[in-house]
Image (spheres, rainbow, N blue to C red):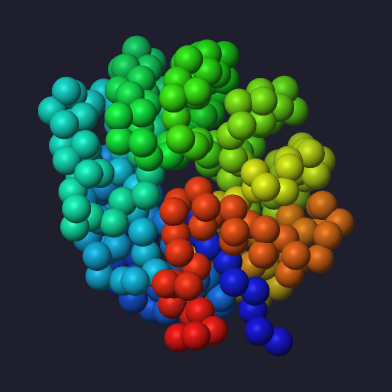
Amino acid sequence: MTAPALIDTAVNLTDKRFNDDREQVIERARRGGIRAQIVTGTSLEASMKARELAAQYPDLFATAGVHPHVARDFTSETASQLKELLTSPEADMRAVGETGLDFNRDFSPRGDQERAFVAQLELAVETGMPVFLHQRDAHERFLPILRDFRERLSAAVVHCFTGTREELFDYLDLDCHIGITGWLCDERRGGTLRELVPNIPRERLMIETDSPWLIPRNLAEPPPVRGRNEPALLPEVLRQLAHCRNVPAEELAAATFDNSCRFFSLDPAALPGHPED
């Protein structure tokens, strides 16, 4: 049986845990039906590396942004460099981010996080690009900032959603897409998410691995590399999501694929693995 076509909308493929076998990771994903991967930019350096990867592989695309963990380093020069990266004609960039607020770990002062978040939302408005969002334990500050910009943003996805019912409906009220990860497959902490995912409109769903983190805990077989997530494992997220929503996995795969193509402006016919290839 042919694997359903999928798009992994969040892969930290520049992470050092992929340094020894990045080519093999990409190939395993292709064999598993992953037609495209969105490589996440989490710092200026990581965004540049993401662009380099996207330039090398026809099924890789990149985002550019500064994660709240490293927001303390964000300056006006950073904003200028991100803009240059995002608007460069030879760069295949698809979104601004990963940006947002993380008050769970507070690796950067909260004021610096907010300043970097606002600057990147302004950049998304200026470039017309969608925004790739991170929020953890910061909803009360995150929501009003996002709300102030939402009408001027072309699109927004709350990546790796693990929040409450209230948070989910706040984001849906702002017409945001919702990214679902292997958190859904975690018997210890994914119960609330499993209850909530049926409430997400089909046209707002996207799926992601957030590799190398959040490995699905209900894998039937061990992962290729112990303890590390990778895009080839995305079908497990799909299966769990389909189970929670009580719909065929193939039907959900088609919906998330189409949603991801529209959000990131991908041409399905131009992606490797198209029937006409």
